[in-house]
Image 1 (cartoon, rainbow, N blue to C red):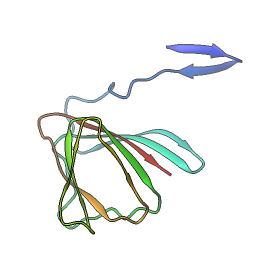
Image 2: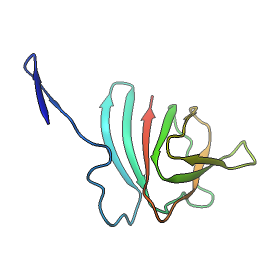
Image 3: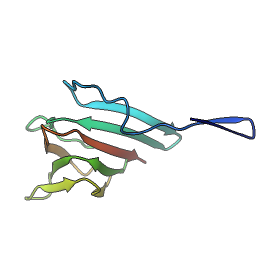
Image 4: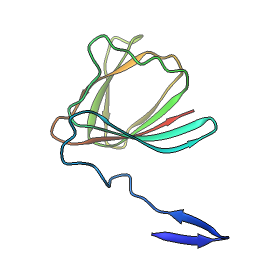
Length: 115
């Protein structure tokens, strides 16, 4: 759908669209990048981080799990963090974390905002 307003063209898209039948690797799609913010969609289907591979990002990351289930591991915590559809959290910059598990039967669809 396209909307005309002040000469600008606004395109409406759907975050649940265009997900391939086969997802051999986690699928990262950049939705928006502007100055100090990046928004991406991530699709996981049974994917997880390698055993001792930790994300240690320069920026904060706000994450919403739109669909599916996942388990995150944080280096400074002894328990896993369970996520279900609708759950969100803020991962501060340099907070070492990894994806320990995602549901292999259902797409786990994430919205990640890096700032």
